[in-house]
Image 1: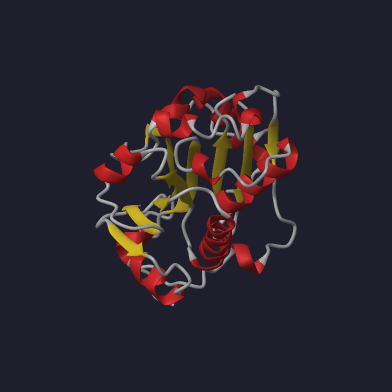
Image 2 (image 1 turned 45 degrees about the horizontal axis):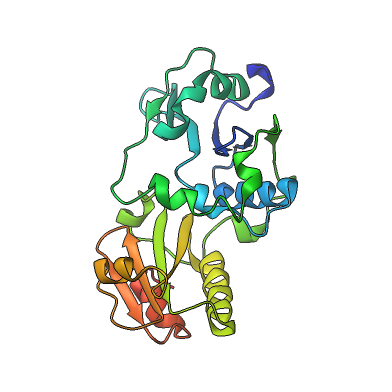
Amino acid sequence: MTQELLPQLFKGIALFTPGGDLVYCIDPSKRGRWHLHLCSTLQEILDLPEPPHFLVPCYTATIDHWLDPRTRQIKTFAEAHPTVLRHQALLNAIFGTNDLVWQASPWKEGVCDRMVLLTYRSAFPQLWEDHDLIVRTDLAEPDPRLLAPVISPSDEQQNTQAYVLRLFVAGHSPNTQRILQILHELLEKYLSHPYTLKVIDVLTHPELAEANQISATPTLVKVYPQPVRRVIGDLDNVDRILQMLGAKV
């Protein structure tokens, strides 16, 4: 791809897999919720059981070409998570940025824990395989669901790269599956940021339940962004969950 084929002002987002595959997009409108779309693209291409939202932000890189209103010059901001910073040459090739030096995005405590990510490997083995994929995905006509979010996040949340959520359950029952379905639908519909939802069985991992001070199940914990908040028991209550996320409908 040459630089002439790209718009002057755009936001670019790249999502890698642990195996080295890459999907990316170039969005001149800078309004799309592309992390969600890229995860869905990986699901379709690699035949995954669900979109791999847990890859965000651990395997992402973003670039923004923007116009400085004061100088009327085009500025570039590019950052990549330390996990994928070694792919700078490839990122410069797909985004037409020559020898641009990418910044490392801040490493946040509790996010992108290697052992947590490895728990997904058995369910998503394709992500740890190298298929030599480099795929650009764009929407010819942007889906309204991927544009303006239903929730107006606060200024603090707008700087958030991803939400980290943990659902503590006692065994995997039909009720657990029902709760997961409700949560995924709720988060996809209302949350304007990427998220990672980790399910922890307190019967299998009592030490994690103790470390997180879990006294009853089900319990949904928002680990990041801080402050840590939780909803215990009634996970059918949409208002309580949205309040925990710190979002306004």
